[in-house]
Image 1 (cartoon, rainbow, N blue to C red):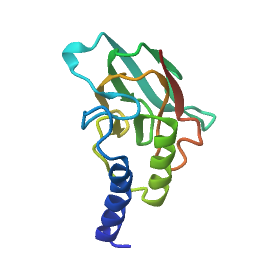
Image 2: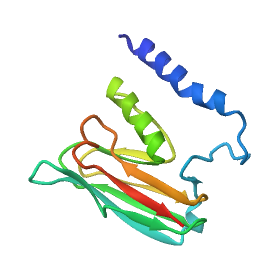
Image 3: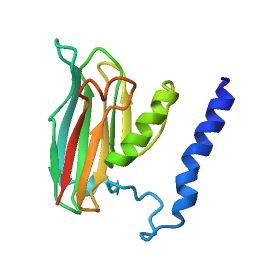
Image 4: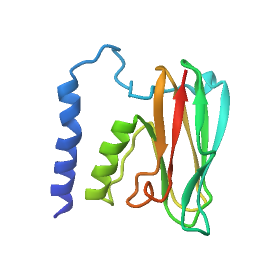
Length: 158
């Protein structure tokens, strides 16, 4: 498959849910299942997330689960302390499953989403996020094989 074919297929598949969803009830173009991008000045706390591999072959995030209050804005400081490329994606279980399936089809796919960051070994980055909705969500690395190796965890928003 050529890059153009892959890109075209990807764009069409990503736009279908947006077209089916209509304008939504929130009126925020950047509103997602797990909330929306936040403003750094409104962050009430920082959460340090580390991605790495264990000697057992397992791949992990530390900490392994998260809990927030509805409406809370958090600054995630994400560090790849491992030997492999990893990503941090914050979304609903369903959206992460869809994204994971797409990544399996197009493993070299790069994306620029406000709820995700891909990091090479030794790199760090930040995501500022407002949890505008209560519910259960997930953070995960959706690179092929990483999720299955343990790179995911629950996010509870009350």
